Length: 273
Image (cartoon, rainbow, N blue to C red; front, side, top):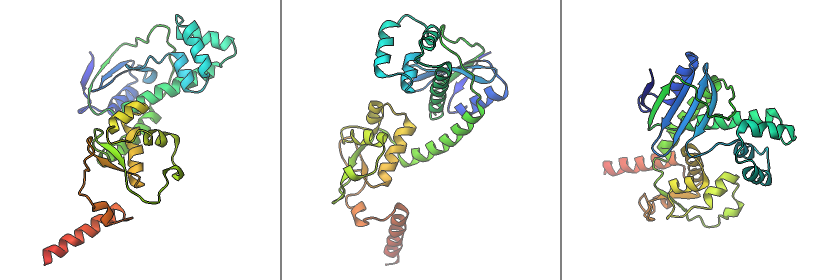
């Protein structure tokens, strides 16, 4: 009998705990608001995972893991389109392009990343059924769930905090007015620069995430960092500010908790008058 329900009532963490503790064999299907995913387990271990909007082919996974070059990926897509992952894997190993461990390591990393993304899915339906229908020709792996569950739990706590800090991905970002600040001299990593390049009141945070291929956790993490650094501010999609004009400039350089304290003291002072 299949186990099915709503992620609001039964989280991904709880599902993986059940699969792990009961050494379950079967497939977990999850349909979120904007995406779907499937994960297949053998005796409580992850064997395969796939997102509905990605083909997850072996060439694409190897390229993502920097095991093959752009040119090699294009060649494989053109000349090996009809081959299964198993056939292609043997061909690449025999030709000396990659090792067996390269392939397994890349697949383990790719499947693990998919499961980590699922921890941030709090809306949607799931169904676990007792079968293990790994797509024909695909290469299964064997990944223990314990570390994945612990990492997912930490990730969920971070995600909940970031949801509080950046609650609405349909808001937009705009650069703050900070005279004398040269953005080119700000120490940002590659992912942060990618987000910065799309900052415009016309682009919602959700749009930026889609364009840069980031999940909710990744985009919230970067936006929160930019907000904390004072480089950007949240604005409504049409450019209307979300806070009273002049509130930030009234307390230049003051941290949020200090601002709260100042505001509270002002309120108490007004009440005493």
